Image 1 (tube, rainbow, N blue to C red):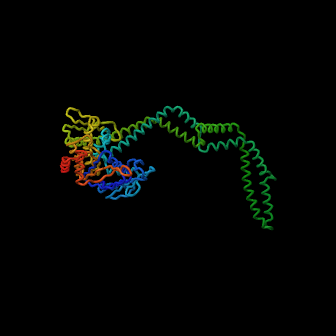
Image 2: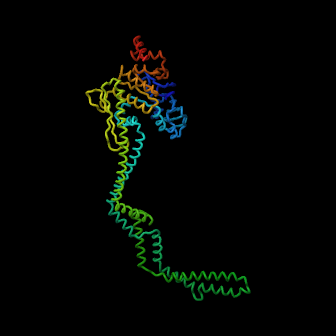
Image 3: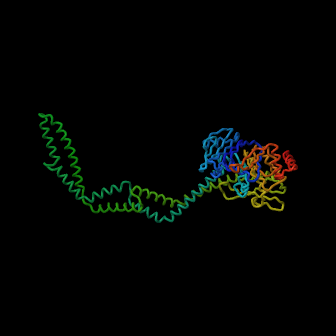
Length: 552
């Protein structure tokens, strides 16, 4: 419930500081006095887009702040989701606009994003202005009304989950169909490329091995000559390194008895001779196995050329990447070969998901159809007293294709006369009739969802007299049922029904035009309502009529 509103430097308002009681309150004032400005300020608190032009000329900043009693609103989860400080009894929302275009929002003195403000605002205040009557043209609004009356949130959630799975499966099937179609169109070329890669005899490290072998084969004569020379130097009968090392070791061994210092040297020469013998044996073996083989060189180079060509063709740099491409092509070709079985499985999956979705949709439809009857009955009970004795209000539900909100197309059909067949309400209802339909819908909805604060902005457009009194009574009953209702009105019948009466006035000061709002005393209410009845020249009869209205 809105308890207190403070506005400073917003549009024509210098400063407004006012309390609101529970129950039914009314706001009156001449056209252009500033009633819409106050609504605009409240809209900013509910997360509407800010405009620096709204700041009062000459001022650097405007501030709008409201205090709400939120006890019993069950908003803790919303505060927790937004990591905001929660007080189970009180909530203070503040919005600040700077002349430089910056806007800041606070909830309980902590900075808050606009998304949180909008979510919180929708749970605190419902503003019904004339443009909201356009909602009657929208199917989702009409469906939403039925869902509210149906209390079908659990069934909607079940359906939404099933629909999400169904749509995901449909997308998967569609994507696979496109991939397979593209693959089939490219199958011949894909198979040619795969066979080309497969026949290349690719393996990890093959390129490096072939490059080393090619280098060896290309320099076989130089290698053979170097190995022969090394073999000669190592294995010469008397001048070879191996023989010389052995003789040196024997010479030292021969004197180690009389000159022990050479014993370690002799041992080291023995070790060196053994290692040299091994080296000499390997050199000799390599020398024996090196032959110039032009055929093998051609084979190796041909294999390498093929690898280089494939790397260039596929824009890769390594054999590993070629192998990955080959394996992927093999998988694609396998998918084409197994596509019939795969598509059959996916179609079966989609059919099963659709069946579950339709089952959930039918359960949701059943709740909506039951709620449609309740809505028709509730609306008739409200519209007939509002001057439409022959009214017919039908909630027409027809089946549609599965969609995010179910499989129901909902249209409100309306007729105010016996001779006219019910048609979509937005097409046949007059302005006054639409106002009464929307008020009745709001009254019905507020009872179902317990909207805490409802503000009606001139919902009485196009009505007068006894009908206005009935509309006022309906708003009063909504307030008596535990909701705070505020009505901005031009009709004395509605103004007189309010428990608290506020007047918005405009005045000229040295600083320019200003707008302000104040709560009227009982005596001021009489004169205000009398003025609404008779105009500027308030007669005694008008005053008496005002007193009579206030007794209602």
